[in-house]
Image 1 (cartoon, rainbow over the protein chains, first blue to last red):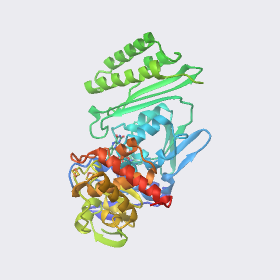
Image 2 (cartoon, each protein chain N blue to C red; image 1 turned 30 degrees about the vertical axis):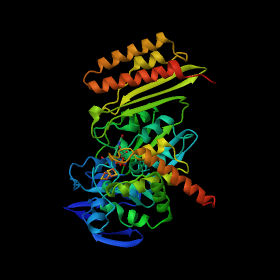
Image 3 (cartoon, rainbow over the protein chains, first blue to last red; image 1 turned 90 degrees about the horizontal axis):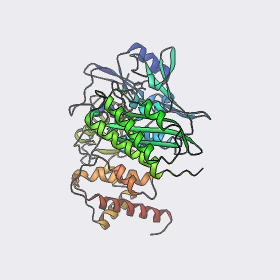
Image 4 (tube, protein in one colour; image 1 turned 135 degrees about the horizontal axis):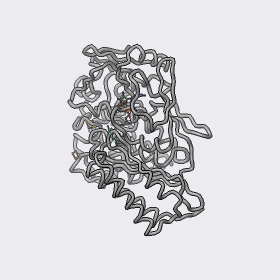
Length: 285
Length: 160
Ligand SMILES: Cc1cc2nc3c(=O)[nH]c(=O)nc-3n(C[C@H](O)[C@H](O)[C@H](O)COP(=O)(O)OP(=O)(O)OC[C@H]3O[C@@H](n4cnc5c(N)ncnc54)[C@H](O)[C@@H]3O)c2cc1C
Ligand code: FES
Ligand code: FES
């Protein structure tokens, strides 16, 4: 134990086993990874926390990046900067974009992916991209480990810890990510837009898209995905219009899930993305 | 709790509450004047310091996490050769950040130069994103970063 403030204890485990043990003994603790979200959410000049804290920085098992032929595995406490430095040949472009839009380089020296996925009631920058990539996450508690699809991660159990994120490699040759706003402090005025797709001889296949950073939910439109999958690049004007219409009715039906600002921005993003497919994309294979 | 760390190359020990912001500790217990605070949200960079080689916003860092760290503020950095490249670039471009922004601006420039030998505009803008200074033209800062990079390149090549 490191110290004590107003009755709050700070625990600093030095190994994963020690961490799991501490978490079991003190399930109601705050896990402190980079601390950037926890500090940013503080209201006053003097930070105060209502529970004990477990500081993850001494747990080396959570700070590793591993790469196999099939996937990239990232420890929950690896700083975002280090993930970005893995390089563009390994890190999928859309994920790099999502991570690069977190704060500034100084913030990214501290921020981690575990912290980005670990905030209750908020889906932040990396969530949609990782979900669309079929990433899985490992949740551990003392003596138990489970891997689940990120898309099914609604909340992390009281005594659980997110330890690793595994991202399967796929040939996503179309990748788009854009975000506006601050999804942590102002989720109603924030939005991300992610598209991934594979192409084969100029034909789009397996297109996936998500509107995220809107608060608790991440939205997908199967109609939009199905319509674009199978289309030949570049899109024709007619296909462009049809895709916009499908997206427009999706946004209209998302009543309650999206604020007027988010609807407007998601439409702008979809126009931008479809224009890329209509005007810019040149098939070079 | 008692914490100790290296502050500008010297061992520093002080009594703090564990979640106190490092920026406050440096200002009040460490008598460091280059560290200022404004947003307390990790945006404005006026509280930047270098911890174990990385530039970070010290307002985002609680006391308990810096035990045993190596912390450099502008006071320490100004004794290095790297500092003088940046100051020379400021003199030549006419960029002149006020005392409030000086520490953050110089350390942010240093962080760019450490990562990129030939920094480009998007990289510089990214590093300065969130900066709230209304008076210094970002164009001048951009020129200064590029010039300082050039001086370092010349030094590496052994030219003046
Ligand atoms: C200036 C600024 C701008 C920002 N902009 C963005 C942005 O545009 N988009 C964005 O997504 N975020 C943004 N953030 C928020 C934050 O920096 C990121 O979300 C970051 O990835 C959080 O990581 P962290 O390690 O600092 O999390 P922490 O603050 O340490 O933790 C966040 C939450 O996750 C929990 N947690 C941490 N690790 C684990 C774990 N291993 N298992 C289970 N729970 C865990 C914590 O208990 C806490 O509730 C910004 C922050 C700042 C300061
Ligand atoms: S006071 Fe720390 S970044 Fe603004
Ligand atoms: S240089 Fe300090 S506010 Fe502009």
